[in-house]
Image (cartoon, rainbow, N blue to C red; front, side, top):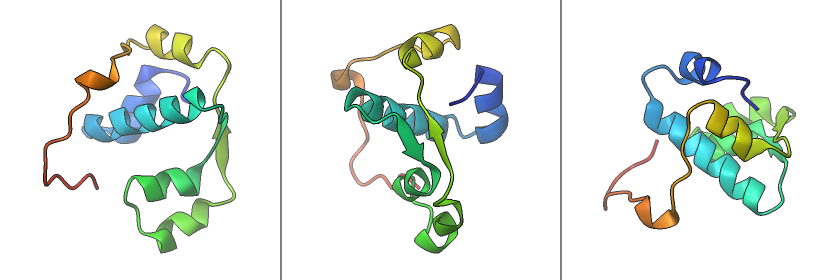
Amino acid sequence: MFKSKTEIDELFGKDSEVAGLVIAICATMFDNGVRIIPLGGLMRLLGVPSDKAKAHDEQAFELADDFYEQLEEMGFEKISDSQIQIPNNTTLH
């Protein structure tokens, strides 16, 4: 997982929406008992073409047991599902 908010900012730059989606996907997987996140699969969920994501299929990262505590330390706030809204006809990639 990411070690700091700065690391997330450096990786995603101005694409804070993408960073938010990555965190949300990781949180969903964590909530469902998945701790190992395959990087290629995550890329596909974000709309990266499969031929590009394929190069990362052997890479993964692990979510720590204190995943939510780490997010809070980075300044992220947990929001309820009812607060998440994606406008109709929006492409996420």
